[in-house]
Image 1: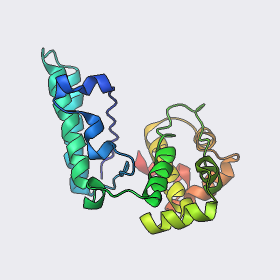
Image 2: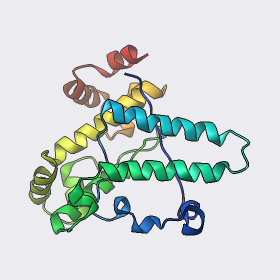
Image 3: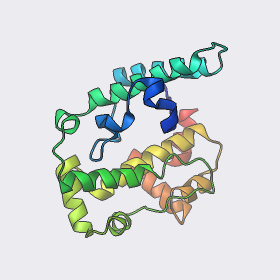
Image 4: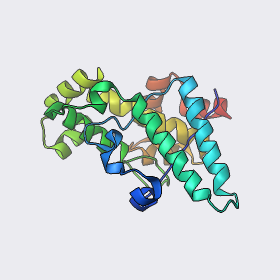
Length: 210
């Protein structure tokens, strides 16, 4: 499987109603309680990758109206995400449980991507997130278990592992730098964590990814 990491950053001004014909604040995907993370199938990943590749190609073109075209590509991705939302999310009756889940995921995702060895995760444990959300860690675990089927620690570990794989594949940082940026005090702790999550040591994973 090929690896592709795409990101589209845009300001409110880029998609103002007079430019795009939509008000992004009215779109369900941007409402509190929505799902900010989607697990894509291989077929879906390929479809999204094709859109990002077209955006990247258009950025370097000299087409006069390329930013209008780029707006259309961004909206295509937004609508693709909205189609992935469960019906209960796109037509939500929000409750406190959904809100806490959404806030937790937002806090988690806000720490990524890691773009420098000097950047470091500040929220690493279930207790860290519970304190930030001003709720008891047991309550947070119960809510996430009900909404995602996983505990807080499992969700955090999965996301940290995902970022670790990306850094090992796509940067030349040494394992010590990656361990530090992901919040591990000792390289041995990171190596043990990564091996437990993936079955492979970081250096071996990196060499197999080349």
